[in-house]
Length: 336
Image 1: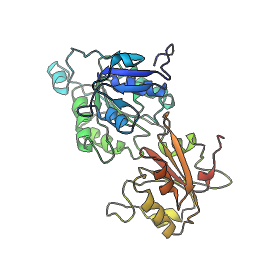
Image 2: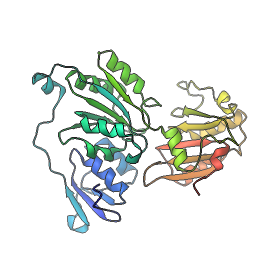
Image 3: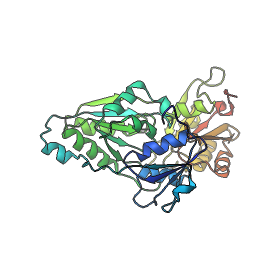
Image 4: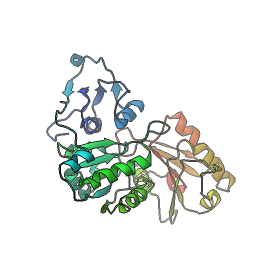
């Protein structure tokens, strides 16, 4: 938002969903506004649908503009949206580039200077739902924004199609920005996307981001390492539970590692993971914490023990996106 304006505490109606509405809504939420979008879930961009389903924005297609403090009417552009085919038809023959940008957490202030510059110069921005989307306000007015966000157990764009989108636009001579939350190479499939581009001779630029595996605990006052308590940390994915045929983790080794255990994408499987770690020898009284919506105004932290952290997180209504921390450091809050 403009530094001269503040929408904190105001009710804001987005009267029309436009290409930059996602960036506007994220900026408004960060500023403390109560946001209503005059739309239904059907046809809504994935990232806006995610905010609505998490209760962060209200959807009301019949919203009364006079009942809100501020009404924003996004003008629908009459300019044709550029596509790889139209770019090629206009004579673009040089191969473009693909920049893999790690956006860090939801707070755009945590993005690197190089990342902001990448947003400014991009022809096409392909983004996920957990990227700090308010940074899109730095993009050019004519940028093409492609929402490929994945909602847990909901709508998603297959990774193969995302790879195709990157390749198609780059081969049409466009500079493509792949914007993700966290870091593209930490459970972000950045390696797959880089390989897909390399197979077509497309140059790839990497702009690292702050991984939620360390940033989310830090914002909650939890240092993943502490000289007096632990000498390392282990980061694993919990998107499938122990015992699932798709799981390749040795949970016994994780339990015996004597390191802080950080689990990404593990809220839905936390109960099974906790039971397995206890069965593998980790004491049930081991401190544990769940940090949800890190970097966002809606950030919350639940603390407990390995034996009860799943029930505690569920009771307090914490859900994805969230990071789980298990180990002695999870009992700390060094920011108090």
